[in-house]
Image (cartoon, rainbow, N blue to C red):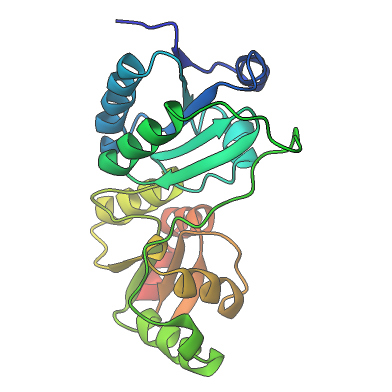
Length: 242
């Protein structure tokens, strides 16, 4: 059942038109993907919240179909939620955290309208949404971090640093590379870089590779999805792990 405040975004222009209709309105932007199981649950949560909060605007953005919008909010994994009032960032929620989303929407959608001292048409700055790793980054020197990264990279012959897990990937590239390895019966271990910001940023520097997933073989970086896919197809990867 469709609702006037629950809208599927069809283009960046459509998105901007919806946001600009009322700059005092709270907007809840749901970045999702068809292939991600957690997104299906959170889509239902978003629809239910739209019913409970008719004054708020709920925008459904399929991240891989609307890359310009996803990039403008620096969306790196799904599901992710951005809560705005006009162009003011109120909250950022990563993952299928229905309880936190419900609480945040209840807090902001029912709060009094205010007029900010300034406005901007730029996308909101990215807020931290990383689960703490249990290691105090301030106490870990660069040398110690690099040793930890090397240990992770050498924990097995093939190691995949990805967003999410093979069972619950959080981005399309991670989903495709884990499916490729499974299809070729390649044994590997994985590490969710969204669970540890130090590892995430450290690998970018250590491997001189700015994006994820990253596939490591025998302690050395092979590359991302495109490179691995090409090497699997031409037989180079099988020779590398033999």
